[in-house]
Image (tube, rainbow, N blue to C red):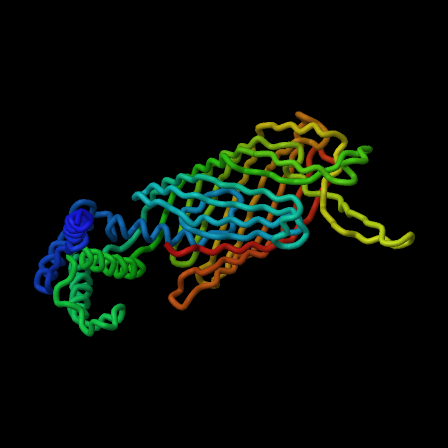
Length: 416
């Protein structure tokens, strides 16, 4: 009996909570609501700031869509939307994914995950590998030059969107096959959200007809507290290490900043950037030359078999030291909208600890040149950027003189 008495109030409370319905409106109330929304939008565009072609929220959407046109698997985090990238060359394979982003007007916060492999085959984790988790903050601003249409054009556009929604008010709802027709009343908040979403879409389409050029500026700050570098090594003249190479993991904390500019007109997109990366590198940072180690077992007196093979480092001692070093790079991406192709040019100055020393610093001057091949979907939106590239490395204060490298990069913007 007590159990029943306890259950009854519980059912009453849960019934009150889950039984509450959102405020609903009919088509006439929607038309009144739409009128108010349209008036607010026109006031923002024509009264509050006469230099606007679209509402601020739509302008921010346009800027973020534009970024996907120039993403080319960046070495330094400077991307302002969700993306995934892959960089493959003879030294290493690098993959990055940035699946989470928090958007607050002109401020963006995101998390990116990065993996770097030094194996000779793609996704070969048995040799040197590096795993990173980074936090990003981006602030951006921008402007457009345009020929602004008359207010009547906006009024006609908004009216067309409103009429479209009224026309579809009683269409069939295929999400729930047990209901043949949607109720004449709908959730007020849901209708407002749907209407604003449609208005945004049509404003974006309208802006394409009237703008002449775009200018976007943004700065990205990245902090990588977790960057675990994992590798194996053996010590010269140490028999034990020859039989079983030592494992080592070193955390390389990084902080980077990226200063970017984006310019677009009817024929070209140009994106120069300056990138700075400070990190506490260790003795083997930027060193990719390894030796092959094989574990040999004897089958018979004259027969041997290789049980295991790894790419390892051969060191003179087990002393590992770290130094805070600053890398710089200048990058420029230019894309021709007429031909649908572009170029990706990058110059980097990379510092590293000279091997077998604790505080001597060597440098790599690297120049890379790539061809940007944007692939688009049926709507003309970028789906993936493919960049085959050539890189030339010149070593300063190191045993190597120069090195040539070929590779390919893939960058995929992920839909928000």
